[in-house]
Amino acid sequence: MDWESAARRLAASTAVRPESRWYAPVATTQRHRFVRRWWARDTADDGKPVWVLRDGAADPEQWLRTAYSDSTLVTRVGPHHADHADPGQTLVRSSDRYSTSSSTLPSLVLLMYRSGCITDTSRVLVTTGSGYGTALACARLGEDQVTSVDVDPYLVSAARQRLADAGHHPRLEVCDLTKALPDGSYDRIISTVSVPAVPVSWLEALAPGGRLVTTLARTGLIIVADKNSDGGATGYVAPESAGFMSARHGEDYDAILTDNAPGWQHARHAEGETSTGRYPLTYVPDTWDLRSTLELLLPGIEHRQHTADNGSRTVYMLHRDGSWARATASTRHELPTVHQGGPTRLWDELDRIRTWLVVDGELPVRGAAVTITANGVVTLSRKGWTATVG
Image (cartoon, rainbow, N blue to C red; front, top):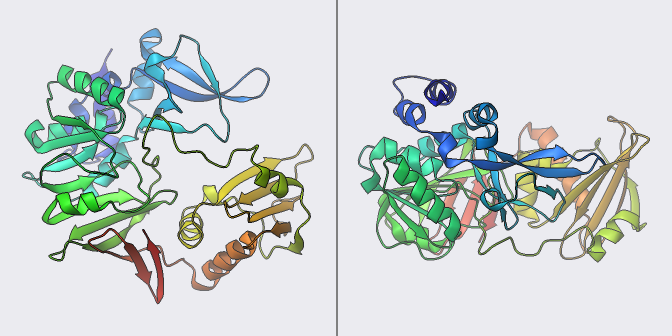
């Protein structure tokens, strides 16, 4: 297997310049050794969406091609890790079965590391996953400056062995990222797992002037902030967007609003209040700024969509407080018929945000200033707009 040439091509497309400090780490790290099996999206013979197990050793050419592509490789779906799956195994893809671990696309790992402004002397804490991002940090800094954490004991154990095989022996610990971190002081905390708010433990573990880089759960917002003398931090929302898996606290995520939840029956069939939407249909999870703004203002909305045999499309929204919305349009540019009910008119809130976007040309989450208090409360602000998380 000519992994060296493949790794150099990956470095050329992600680190871009050979003089980049990240070029050599990408060009010399064997990503395929960190992702030996993975789950790929596919469609079964009966048309149902499934996760299909891919085994690198069974198809070395595909392994090489996939491992050294700039793409995210899903290694765990719900509690099912690809390393433990039976040959040929498939999993039904459904709205209540989420991917729970992956090897993040290399360009995004580098974006997070660059946002951290890592220096040659930085002591960094990163998240483990497959161990590939940890290997890049070790190759850039040396293993003594790297601590890597994950909530999953198996992931930590497997990454420790694979890192050792690559000649790296950083500090690896099993811990819930949102709670106490391993003892120590860190110049950079860089998380490729999203968090609902900035944990107080991060602020306590950051050295004076240290920087944290993370994404807020269920948004595309990359938060970059430097620690202040008062124990809080200030910074900004990065111009780029990113989507990471949310931090979990055990084998799988907490219960979500499954397709069988009573609220979805209302969303699919209830009449509610009927109106015509202001704009053509949009599916919020496919957006960046709409999704992020809506999540900040009304956190916890679940989304679904369905295309009928006649080509009409329906988008559904459901909140845990019982609010729901359903919008249907026959064509791409037709204004939808909207049904909604519950304490909050979800579609009206979405249309209000879209009007904001039309009038200003952008939403204030883009480039917002970030202030984090010592107890982890995050405030985003721009042009008179504010939103608070935590």
